[in-house]
Length: 599
Ligand code: ASP
Ligand code: MG
Image: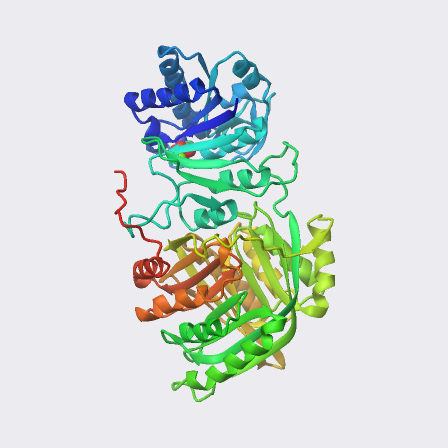
């Protein structure tokens, strides 16, 4: 007999008929011999309606009262669903978050779950009842009983946390789409359903705007190894499985505060190739990386950023044994890429002894302090960072090989990790190189000119933004270096959420002035397109294919940043949709049928 946690979202319980349909599904699951805990959202758009009511009364409603109000939505659903179950002869009982004992931080409106008491739940399950639990809510402590909510969309998180606490066999998330799609079907109607995705890939896609799953729910699933399925409540289709590594046993305390970093990784045997002053026009990156892929050179990280004078720098890292081949390709192609605008010629720089050190773990999303802490730790160890790569589950820094050991021990210390290991990539040959494509139109780009090239600068910049809780993405330091007053300077560019951009620009302008750096430039007119897939590692040519698709449409790439499982390009905002479409097509992710987006 399996223990199953089923979660039904707002549209799945949007009407009496839908609630009855859910009751039927639950009862069928019981009849084939399972125990079921159901977690529900508020009916339809109830929560939005409650938010509106509050704002009709107050511009800035008291947060405690807001939680009191919003938690009522789920309470309606649990009672109705229990009645519907009882009506068809299935014993059931509804429970609020407080009744279960879902204990959260004492933060109203965005509390994280600390732990879940399971005795009461188990007692009812053992008595043969379905327990219907209100999602999205908890209590600050079993003494205070202050009602808290987890943040919008939080009932996914409730469900996965309950599954972790109960060590359930599976957590099924029922929604109004058939599962996780290769891209946004409103932009690409031929988007296809995935049968499977890893939790790391899902975290990337979720934070790039795929709304099907709350990223915090995926973090818990990954950390506790909870098997997760996303499927439609309207059909019996199998949906999409979200797979997680068989994690170590973790204690079921501080569920959502669990260490954001659970591993320190390194790759000692790397070299870096940079091409300086290559022309800023469509097709250049495609040409370069196609040549490289033709030589079967597997590149690891790639960065590209635009600079003054309409030219770009591109840099990439490869494993040492193929560095010579990579250099040969770059040198052969550089003259052909001569920039006619600039008098200067393209130049190839090779750095032989570099290493990549990374922090890895689920729990960095929305916590910019984690990356900032890594940069600060390296700065304190006197390590200069040459390249930075960020993803939702990993931050990597390329450093001098001779700094590698020092970096690792400092990081192990700072993040309280006992041992480090070389990055392990174990993807089976069937793992598709690219699982999904995402478009993020809500990012802006900031560039700071002429930042001193010495340890501590990234720590300073991103520490400052972390203090303001501003998350950064796609950090790129220029490869080109210039001397200002005898000091080496580089440009640093990165993307942030649009809503944070002006704030970030102000803060950075202030430091830039104090430190004597250059101006801080903001560009809101960008779009970020990304491909995600853990099978990219060890498959040369994937980035090249993405760049080629963009080049064929004459879309200029303004910025490139990669992680092990993601390649992101910044293009101009008005080319974003086209970019997504051509990339999705290039990787043959489209199906034959058009996906009908539920109204
Ligand atoms: N009802 C809450 C919301 O609309 C929680 C959820 O549905 O996940 O945000
Ligand atoms: Mg939801």
